[in-house]
Structure formats: C-alpha cells, structure tokens
Image (cartoon, rainbow, N blue to C red; front, side):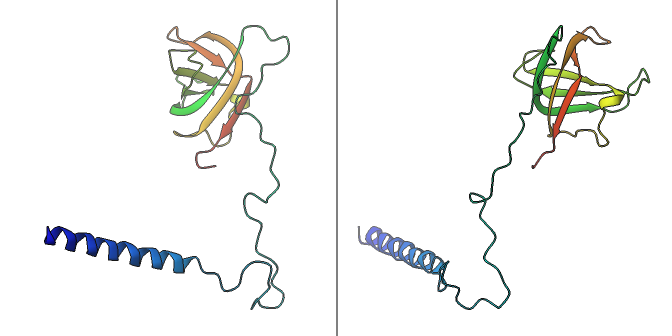
Length: 156
C-alpha cells in the first residue's frame, strides 16, 4: 500500500512538472498588437491561414459537356499509371480508387489522350478527376475516355 502511494505521488509530481513546463511555453512577453521590440521596418506577422482570403477551389471532378452522350464523371486517388501505351498512339492510362467504380466496384480506369496528357503525368497518390464517354478498353473493360481532366498533386 505504501509503495503504491509512493508511485502515485511520484506520478503526480511528474505530471505537475510537465504541466508547469507546458504553461511556461505559452507565455508571450510581447503579445500581438503591442509592437514591442520589433526592429524598424518589419511589418506585422503574416496573416494566419484562417485570416487569408480563401481561393475558390474547383471541384476535382470536371463536369460533362452540355448535351454529351454517354458521359460519365469519376475521380479519386491514383493507384497505377501506364505512361507508355502499348498501341503507340501516345495516350496514357491511370487506374483510380474511386467511389464511382466505372470499371470495377471502387476502381475506375481513365484513358488520357495525347492532347490532354499533362507535361508531368499523375503519380501514385495524386488525385485525378475526369469526365468523358465510357467505352470498352483493349481488354473489354469499361473506361472513361477523358475529354476533361483535372490533376491535384499529392500533398497540396
């Protein structure tokens, strides 16, 4: 019993010391708005992320063109990229993990034609959105032949 009380006392002292150290880290001798010891010519701190004006972001999945026939939309994370097309027409293919599941449940293949192919192809983990008609691929699978494409790099 005495040994247990001793452990509890030590644990309480350690937690109390950590709490004091944590409180000491929050002390700001120069609170915002006072100016304090700032060097001449220095402006205010840059605005925080919440204070910055918001950019209007576009949705990842582009819309189908008006009156497009057989048009589907899909988007998701890139699982695989086929950058060299076996038939040699210069298009690329990306396999996406997507809710739309056009090829298989949870999977969509997007055929990116040469004219839409970005300078740097998407990589695994990037997000891709595409819209266009759905046609069978070389193995009979359903895939989107992209007419519109949006790529968001991972980490952005």
